[in-house]
Image (cartoon, rainbow, N blue to C red; front, side, top):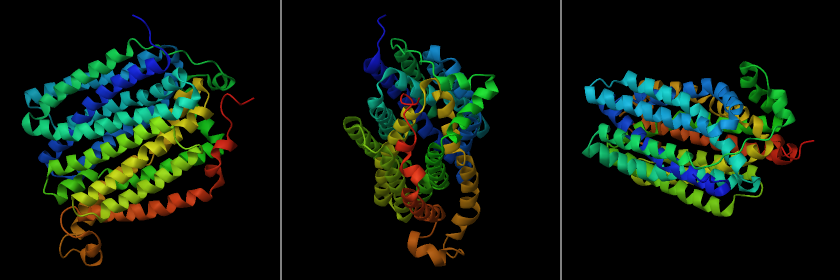
Length: 439
């Protein structure tokens, strides 16, 4: 078989991931519908995010070190997530077929997939660094964003339709086929080995030393640490509402899965348009402006979502937020790829994820009980919060989550606008040299 290199090889890998992510996204859309039918609990749905996030964060430093150790066989590392998704799908199908599926099993399978996913992002990021010239990094990141965008468009529509017609079992069968396609797409591509660097030599040691090296690298570059702090704050604030996004819409529409699908499809279309434009454009010359503007507009979109009481404003808020996601993420990714030596990117990118997402489990733990015990009861007609905030977001089921979105969006917009005044963040691209320019 002829091995595909460069942009052609990367495009084949990208196409396989497009199919694989679409299949897994349809399943991940359908599973919350099953959980909501069984529990009608915002806490139960928020905890799904916790079990998908916490193992990922805890295991990421070790996975990043292993990605760098095994970087001479990077394709095998890239297969770990797809193989695990396939095996988890088989187990889920078995549980459904025997009538033994329960909430605990869903949490366990999500945790197992999260462990495998810890290998995915650093390994695929490293592959794009090795296969492409650096002027194409932001374009490649935008291409990866279109994968999620296409899944965001098709998964809600297909998930709602297939779940209503066939149930969860048939959806899982489709997911298995898609995971197999993603695996096969890796076979013809050639991923070169990373060149050695002085930084990579310094990072070598036992596995524990290598696992923590990514944090040491980031701490030694204050501007990169500050930049990652922006994403930490953004994810902390965004996930206070993000983990309750689906419960809010379902609660305010009497469990209408089509309404949820419409909102998520609109977000997917918006992100796809942004990703295609970025792929053609290549992104702003000063990439940190793309990061900060993207974060600001995301926070504004949460405010719009909270003020909305019906489908049009929810769609508007989702479209606004989704337009800026590819801009912020691809700009940030390009900065890190240019500043980090390839032979330590696994460790450093894993540490990036831990820092950026570190507060997300805390936000998830807080958000569900906060909504179920205080905000939603308080915003019911006659509740203690309804008289003060009822005119702003309305009252009734889900109104408490809407109020949370208003608070988060307002505060986040203020914080992100202030980041333009922080020199370490604003001038990160000049304060930190590119890895190939470092003496």
